[in-house]
Image (cartoon, rainbow, N blue to C red; front, side, top):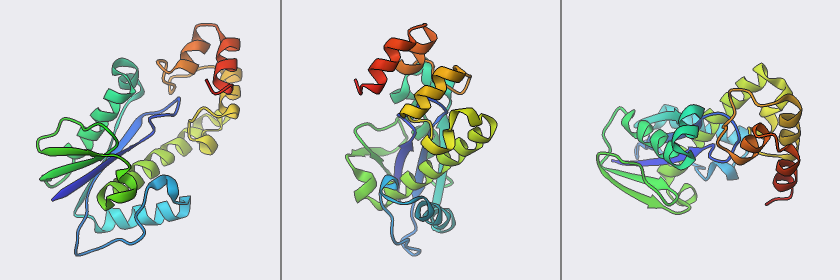
Length: 199
């Protein structure tokens, strides 16, 4: 009973960080699973539907902006991962996590570097986490269209940074993240040069 775990949304400036846990059913295989970042939006959506329909168990969880700011993005990511594993309808015997770190869970856990491209269960988790977070960004875009969230999904693109300078920081933003923190501290020019310069 292997469970794959992956996250989505560590790098963006706003919104929660998402994590998904998936236990696949060998009797109901899903073809085309891969790292969600290597798949087109339509393919991701189709595969997400198949995962939710065919997996033995799956769960998507998140850690809030307030939690990210309170405990840092790494710890918030691990918290979201733990919530996803604990939310499964079955108890896995092993948890395989994409990356370098594992959350505290009540079974064996192993980190797998680039596991989202090599372990089917992690690929499935990657797809569920990303599609869930992208859907939230589109919902937030409908509420706050001035920030362009549906296009960049909260990542610090030049257009997003410009919109943030123009319209200001609202409560969906991670105040502990450097670009947002610099803007709040009244250093927009320093922030602009550093962020757009790639430093």
